[in-house]
Image (cartoon, rainbow, N blue to C red; front, side):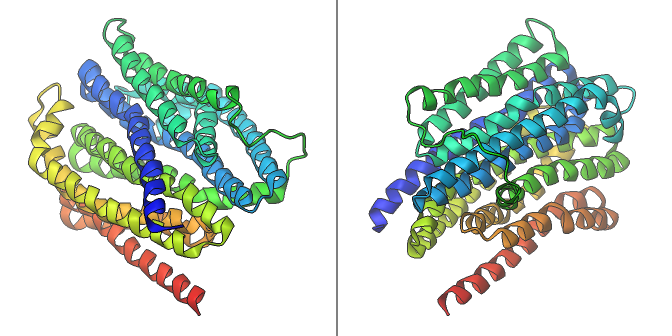
Length: 438
């Protein structure tokens, strides 16, 4: 594809997906803001303790969606429509299985999960409520995450964005109504979050109503081989989401020991803002994935690499702007979530923002390069990058740095991890690039 035409397609997909992902990330950010205003530091701590469960559910939906949609668009590029439909059918089967498992967990194990995540007597009831509702709403979360990916890869990024934004704005409105006028507390916050994907799915249904869908559910036995391919390509998305939850658990435990519940609440502010920033990079990555996967199906390697260059340049530009903003406005930003005007929380979170967010250009690169590998069916390097940044380096780094420098070490463990993983990503890319050329 010519550069001018490619740039036009790149802008269309990436801008729409960035807007959609920012909107989607407002699920948790809206909860953070309204819960901090309505329920104070205890509510904020309960939300922060429960978020890992949401991350796991969300990650499972993305795993099926990203893995399945990537294979789907590659097959469509190769004009293998029957295989493309079978991929979609197998994703639907997997969605049903995961939904049943999560709902059973919500009914039977919510209290146990809250205890495992570190909830004490003061925040236990709120944490249980949030976890249980997230798990009971898991079927719509999983369905929404998966179908958003398929609709986007089916040539309809505008509808995908509209669905994400409609769901997220509905969540914000319902958050306010449920927490303040109706005084429903933490239950209202999580109910608003659970209803948002329902509204998003109603918007997505337009893809079928108008007959634009090129993927169809076929009567076929589930295929273990296809399921393996879907999971292999989608597992980096799951690792990223699950890892963010596990890292939050580890960081919560370390910070609880160093600074108590106020420190955990301060970390909750920083971590949730980090999720919004990461959603921008995920928007770039999910925007370029359908383009690169389709080019991969066509065998157009030159256009794939040009798309990657556009993505990295845009990511670096956005990273610079975001960091300068947080550097200049850290006090104001933290103040929005500090309804009790707790000076300790304000001080810890302000310092955390300035140190923690030095990681963003490296994190952005890692998200983009992992998606590049996934789009070209290079599952192993994508999985390695996700595992390194999600588990293998970040967890020991957090313990080591907190031991040496206490809270400053906690904040710095994230940028150190992302920079090391970025170096690994560059090495993997160069090795595969040279191998491809030779």
